[in-house]
Image (cartoon, rainbow, N blue to C red; front, side, top):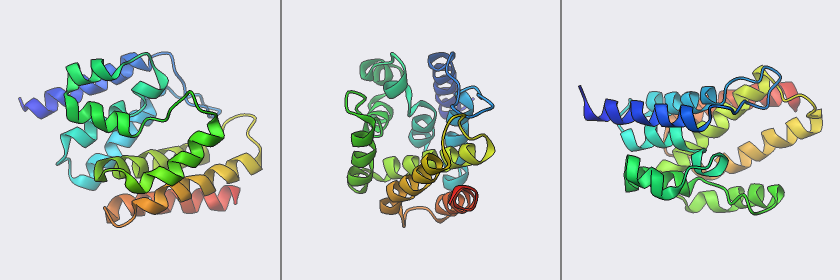
Amino acid sequence: MSTDLVRLTQAADYAARQHIAQRRKGERAEPYINHLTEVAALLAEATDGNDIVLLMGGLLHDTLEDTDATYEDLQERFGPDVASLVAEVTDDKSLPKEERKRLQIEKTAGKSRRAKLLKIADKTSNLRSLVASPPAGWSRQRLSDYVVWAHDVVRSCRGLNPRLEAAFDAAHQEASRQFG
């Protein structure tokens, strides 16, 4: 069996266990792992599965931000490349939400190629989720603001992967149509 396949399934297992009690914000309250596997699938499809670090990063991208996982734990389990990628896309939760959102727009342009691809996949998944199952209690304006913000974050990630960008553009177009 391929070592990469073993590593990928270990990352999926770890992500599922770390996010076991978490649900998506949408009305359907899907298990959070659905988002992580969709992000990894988008990345796999866009890169023909040729970057195991990126795929593992897709599965693990919210562990530092939303669970008690530590950088050291990720580094020990999955190596420094995966841990660094996850850290690179992790927001500083000690900052107010609006500041974190502003920093994502401002700092994404300076991130690595992998981090930018992961950002596109993450925002694509989030927009698809908004359309399929909008969060209860979100006003039309809040939904519209998220759609605009996601576009602003992804703007500096262009020119890296046409397939992934096409998936984002389709999700953005649908979300804009529904909430714009």
